[in-house]
Length: 357
Image 1 (cartoon, rainbow, N blue to C red):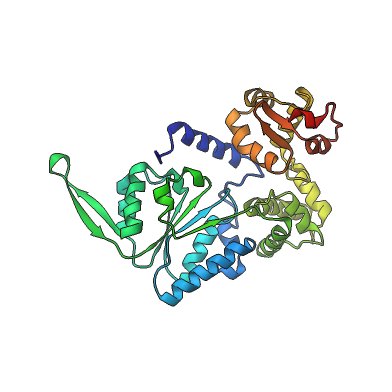
Image 2 (cartoon, helix red, strand yellow; image 1 turned 135 degrees about the horizontal axis):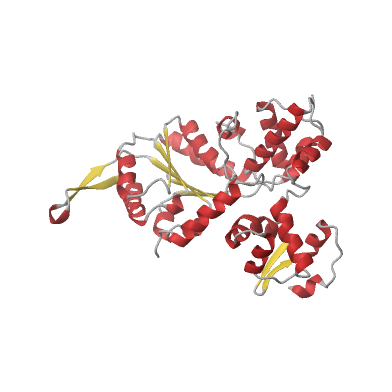
C-alpha cells in the first residue's frame, strides 16, 4: 500500500481545512485569541472531561509505565478534529514529567527532517506528531525503524560513495494523532502499543466542559446556558469553546452580569447558528435538497452548484455532521433529505421520504 497521500488527496484536505476554518462551527483551531486553546486545556488526566473509557485505559497505561520506570509504548490517538487529541498528548507528557517535542506530518517534507528531530530527542522524551497520516513515505519508513529499534540510519555522502551509519537513539515515546486512521499503513499502525479512539461528546459532558471553560474566561453562566451551548457545539469541545467565546463577547457588549439561555440564543443567532448547531452552509444544503430537488436524491455536483460552494467543501466540511445527526442520507443515486431535515426547516414533506431511500 502506498502510504503517502496523493497530491489530489492532500489538496482536498487543504481545501477542506481552509473552508472549515472560516466557519464558526469549524473544528479547526483559530489563532489570535486573547486566551488560547492552550490556556483552556487541562494539564492532568484527572481534569480531562469526557471520554471516560479512554481515560481509564490511558490512566492504567501511564501508571504501569511509571511503576516499571520506563517510557511507555507508542500511542496513536485517532478521531475527528477538535476532540482533544493534542490535549491528551500534552497530558501524557505532563503526567510522565518529561519534555514533549511537537511537529506534524505536513511540516516534515523529507526523511532528513524527521531524522534531525529523532536524533535530538532525550531519553524518555515524548514526540508528538499531529496529522501523522500525512508523513511522506520515506519519513514513514524511517519512523518504523526508530519506533521499533530506536535507531536511525544517517546517510553520509552522495552518489556511489554514500554510506549509511546507524545512530542509536535513547528510548522515547511517539504519540501520533490522526483524523484519518485508514490512511495509515499497517506497518506503522502495528508499531503503536496503544491506540485510543476519541468519540464525539454527549451533551452532558460538553456542559461540564463549557462550565469549566467559562470559569477560565470569567463568564458567569446562568441555569441552562451551558446546556444551550452544548446543543449547538456539534459534539466537539473545540467548537464549544469557540461558541463560548462569542457568547462572552455578547455579554461584554451588552453589559450582562450573567449569561442566560436567551442570551446564548441571541448571540449565536447573530452568527447564524441554530438550535441544532447548523450554520448557514448546513441550512443552505438542506434547503437546496428539499426545495429545489423535492428531497432528493441529488448528485454532489448539482448540490454544490446550488449552494455556490466547491463539491469538496460540501462533501468534507458540511455533510459529515448532517449525516451523523440524521438530516441527510447518502445513497447510490445521490443525497436525500430525511424527515428530520424537512421538520427542522419547518416544512411538510411533499413526497414519501421513505421511498427516496
